[in-house]
Length: 186
Image (cartoon, rainbow, N blue to C red; front, side, top):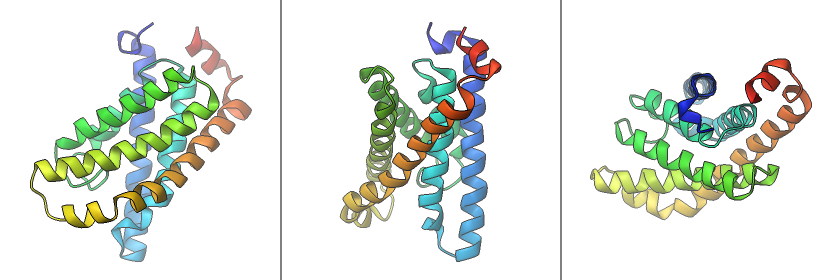
């Protein structure tokens, strides 16, 4: 069954996307206010967002779930600095990121390691799409981002992979046998 034709699964995906955004925004703002450094929340948000969205994808268990969660997240992120500079380009960035993740999970037949690899490539895709959008829109800071591109991808991938691993573990240990998850899979 295709996710977008099913209101029950689509609603749950939307809720997980909104939850990931809310957590990232609140924790990001708190850490930025506490440290005075906007990028201070990147590692924590990488773990939390990856954890919530992988857990959601495992609970929903439908192709396209991660894309829908990322779409909701990116629409909510438009006026914020999450996913790069504010603007509607974030919707395309979010779609691209979600599609890459879903393709990896599909290609690996939903094996657990596919979720971890998908999370790493999700981050790499996001960084590259933010750079590309900054180039297209003529935004400042492109040269600095180009110089640090590999470092940013590598440093951001570790928290994402940790979050994905934790999401998989929590799903299998705590959520897999809950009645609402079993009912969602019917």
